[in-house]
Length: 237
Image (cartoon, rainbow, N blue to C red; front, side, top):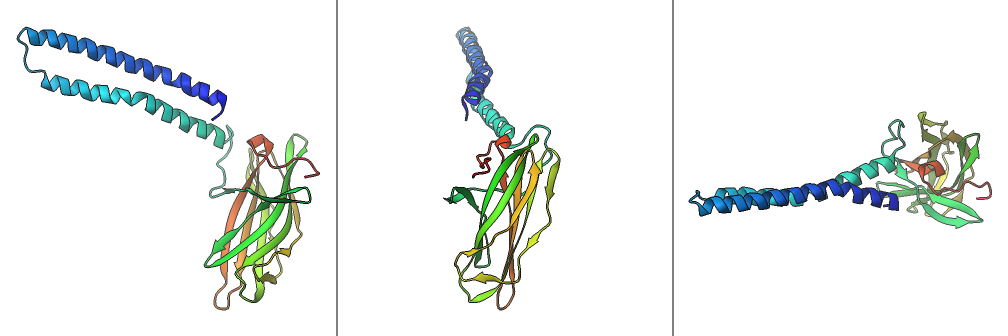
């Protein structure tokens, strides 16, 4: 939580704290009144005492309720830009895997039915006329385990999610010749698209199996500087 959010959180608790104090004061006053009434021959106060205890317990939770509401509002504020359309469902935030030759790299894996496909990509956002160009270069792929087959497939498409909605470029479809030996193999493909918020990569692996091929697909999202991401922007990255 940022300093601004912490300050907002502290301020948001004040009304609940004031309410809590007001309840305490009201309960104390009521207790005095009831005590006087009992001293003058009033009826049993057991029932009133139980009600007051319940009210006091509930009043203790008011600050927590206020804090929970604030946390939810902060999460909503940070997860989407005001006025944006609905984000693509199921998109996974891409995380860096390693750095090589001065380029930031990401891993975009997918696993199903005992198979795991992985592809390393270099991704960056280039400032262009008030928005960004999301530029992707594939580097290498690996399909595990080693089953001695070499007719797998890796298909992917680059897209964007921004103020204009979600959109994708055409699919890149690999030859029916991806090697499945649990080793890294070079795969060089470049794609780019314009966005003012996030870049997307949808990846599909088709694992070559002697009985029945297995498919696995996922969507990965990359945050631009506008959406709070740390994806490189310089052309040297």
